[in-house]
Amino acid sequence: KAGVTQTPRYLIKTRGQQVTLSCSPISGHRSVSWYQQTPGQGLQFLFEYFSETQRNKGNFPGRFSGRQFSNSRSEMNVSTLELGDSALYLCASSRGQNEKLFFGSGTQLSVL
Amino acid sequence: GQNIDQPTEMTATEGAIVQINCTYQTSGFNGLFWYQQHAGEAPTFLSYNVLDGLEEKGRFSSFLSRSKGYSYLLLKELQMKDSASYLCAVRDRNNNAGNMLTFGGGTRLMVKP
Image (cartoon, rainbow over all chains, first blue to last red; front, side):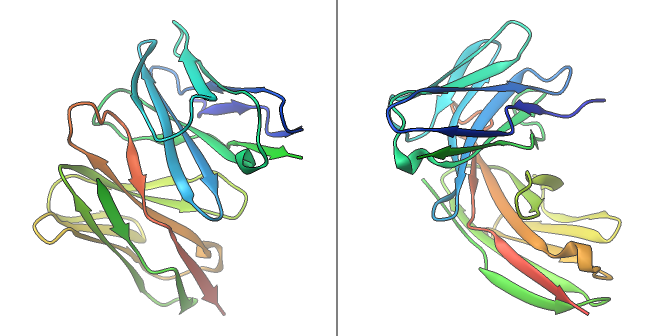
């Protein structure tokens, strides 16, 4: 059974640009969550999608957004990139609420 | 809100046993996770505790006491490859919490020969 797949693995952007990251959950998993990991702040929750609906959102500015498709695949978008957005972005999938979460390998975003 | 504390760093010897503690404060508890993360890689699921007691899985065990807001991860027969960061995360019970996890800062474990 394939794990959580995230693309691309690495990304380099410049300030002001926008970026879209993709996540394909484990087959049969309907919940997809996104996290940002930085050396200073650790892992922080961005948002969660379940059945194409955003179920919860973390404390991030509106530049961070996401969506989920009918096949449970999810994308997150960051607009008007800032240097501080450089981080490892991790996607986690789960069958549903109150289930175990499994992480993908992440997308390492560098903003120059 | 939630607050999760775990030691920043620990060092242990190959073949030994190490216990990594995690204390938490939450308005509504709905499960505690332990993940292992090697440098530059994604967190790997180790254990999930929702009820009090000890869960054993091979060389790794995890313990939970909800009344004390306390958990530990026990690693036996340490191997060099166990050198990694160990992340404690708590899920909240609030209606809208879904699968939102709050993570501790992680414990960096160094295993020495």
